Amino acid sequence: MDVRKIDNLWRFLSIKNNLPVKLELDHHVSYKFIRGNIQVTHQFNPKLWQSSMLHISEKLFQEKSVQHRYHHKKKQFGIHYDMTSTHVQIFFPRELLQLKNQYELDIQKDRHGNYQISLSPFVPKNIYQILDCVNFVCKEMWKKNFFSEGIRN
Image (cartoon, rainbow, N blue to C red; front, side, top):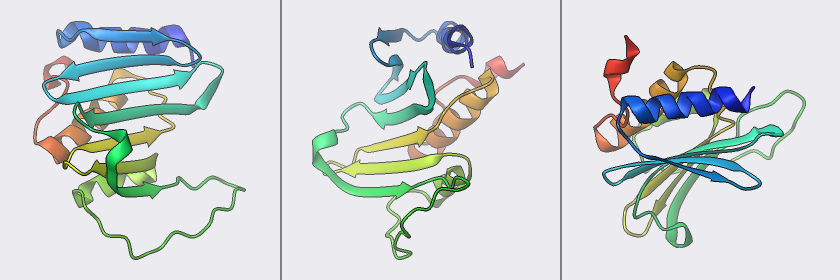
């Protein structure tokens, strides 16, 4: 995957939705969007695409005060994982469980009721993969789209 292509996808969404994009370049490249109280962050290492992550969270989410956590590792061929408990309390909309077929899913809820959803590895090939994923999560969690659906045409 080309870094320039990823940059073009995020900048296109920024322009079409009239949202400022915050780009951070360090060991990881990070794109951050904020709309209302929802924050979308895509960070990746250009040399290691499997560590690419998409975080969709509420702006007031506190990483240090996590009360509930749901983590599902994506199955990979040839790698054995410890079995997770089948009795896990689901504290989020069940529709989000559809994402565990495509991504490694990590959902956290802090003491104040704010959520953070992390998906990895997130390597979008086109604009529709970003729109489908981000808008699906935002619709299920906060009942509104993050990105405008009008740019699909």
